[in-house]
Image (cartoon, rainbow, N blue to C red):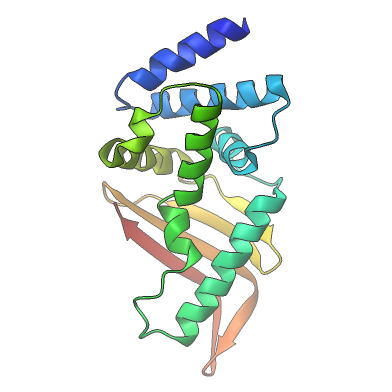
Length: 186
């Protein structure tokens, strides 16, 4: 059974990734492997695998809580320094799924599975475009001490929009901000 699982995943990873169903399949099969092996080396990858199949994500891992905390601090920085467009904050690397990419690459290498699709930037971009479409309207609830909800919502092709709702409004320059919206173009 395990060998069949690995062989099916290998075949899927060798083919061009062009449909959302392929992305879901990859994430579900990776999760099965992690579960069967009781492998805890890839906690961020495990989180994304779970997020793929949950309408709402309520169980937050330590790694995701740390990332969401960094995102919150980055939002505060952006709000305090709106003219600084050059400093990269965690929300940008999160939208481009840079940490996830590293975890997937390490997983594929560790299991001797094809990784060309992740090494090639065009293929990786195609993957995250499809993946963000899957994650739309699947909020992460209470992912950090200061964040009530993190969610992605529909956008134009090759774009992602999101909203972060705060547990307590951020007061700045006499204004109260209860949420922060963001967007990105791939």
